[in-house]
Image 1 (cartoon, helix red, strand yellow):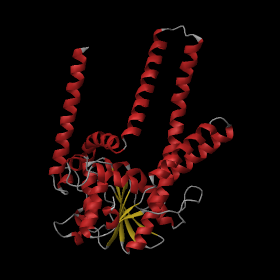
Image 2 (cartoon, one colour):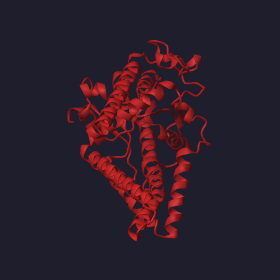
Image 3 (cartoon, one colour):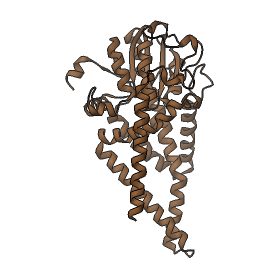
Image 4 (spheres, rainbow, N blue to C red):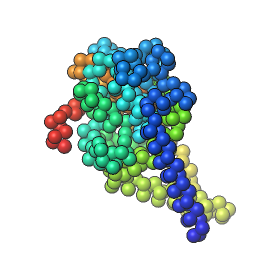
Length: 363
């Protein structure tokens, strides 16, 4: 037992050391050097020239992790950065894109006021945690400040998002009880998948190949460590409750499955438990799919698109928006469609929160 524990801690320590080395290596490289060892981020005519941002044009060729589109409502150019949260390569890309974009009017990040305040409290610029847990959102905001352009927090407020997720979860559990409910679930999943992943209407879009660069793949290891740490620091109680619940559920399921596999003759109670576990395994992906496609993507994409459109109008110039990679294609489709952007049954018409100097002083 002691040997197993020692082996576990040795491997965990080795993994942490490896991740720290990878993170340090990625941060010591200059932005352009992140891609020279494999594939240039820009094609030759798009390469970033040192200290000459005006030469960094986004013309015809697709740039990995970037999508260029036009906001149909304002007819202004928009560049969407499809990031992997807390990935060093995405952090470099977000900062660089903001710095080189011509005629930049505003920057939008995938955050809300409450989450942004908490981010600045936990890992402010120049602090130890700010260096250990940098994010692409903070990198973009710092670059926006250097260029003197406003920052918009474009995501749904967490006070609104939490109850909305609970509502979708409750509706899904109720809908599972009737055939009509299953039709609603199916329609929501189909619609959400089409809005989020169908790229037939887009000329520039993200695909899995955008994230196959070795620098990004290595950065995934860093993201896997940073993401849960950041979540635990920003919201310790919810994180502890969710982590404990998942660990308890996993342990209970493993114990039940182990006991049932050892004893071929199951009692009625054990048979019911096994059936419940099987049903849970089947239904959980359905619940998760509806939550992801409707709550986490479809409805948030509407708010993000509306915030970007507002930023294009108020900023009077191009917009760079730093989003999670799964949001990019859906947001691009909404921006180019020119449709009225309303969510939650047409009741939600709010756009992003502008992060001003006054708000920073009052934080």
